Image (cartoon, rainbow, N blue to C red; front, side):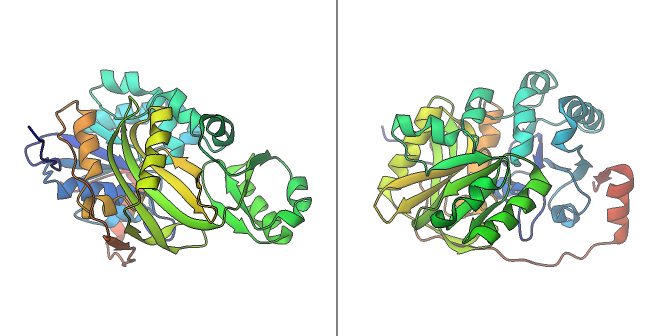
Length: 357
């Protein structure tokens, strides 16, 4: 008997879901799109926002969250992180947490046992998988296994940039955040110092692959299989490499490439693959981001609600086969001013928490 694919229905789910990363703007975080997708699945329960800064714009969207709590930065370490979560649990019972920021995911992975004992469910990869997809390790793990990765080196000073004048353009990247295309030495030095001042060393130099850029949002099952996959081709790209417009594509070769990557990693949970199809016809793995991308609403809009699926998997509830995605579905990022009372900012700044209802 054939199975009819079906998106998750969360309308009968009575629980509280916490989501991180509520900033939108020029360098958007995924949390707002994740929450919108969960609500689109009919979820009527409580949504808790976990933020790091009182200026995260999603705090001020009235219908987005029911409560908001400020977290210590991941750099404060697991002890401070867990202490804050323990306090939050004294105020609200959280059933599921969906982390959406690179730097925090490793803390949630390492705290999974404590979270589980506290009644909090996650759907995340193992620590080993997480470390294998680090930008500093892609070029050593994947090429011997048949996945092409552009030539990549780690640097701690500017000598390699100065001595690479015949190899521009090239990509200059931070280990966790920020990536810039440098067209000449002076530009490369500028980006090196900018990234170093924000994120420290090492800095990553990566060969540019001329071709077409694709992004794929995926939920892996932890055994090498894929629960959902939506590929898009970027149409609008900012100077930070962020896609502000894209379209769902049907590309079997790209899908096969992504499936092989996930099979090798045995990835569990959401991730985003950044892939180049070079003018030589080959696919190159550029990055693996260990969480939903900011454009994940495109997956839901094209017919495949991945954030809702992650909620069910985290709670170990049955998940039916997800539908495919509709080729040609387009997204364009739209900025909109939020009007709020200054008292809202005062409350989150002074108390590090906000309760709406």
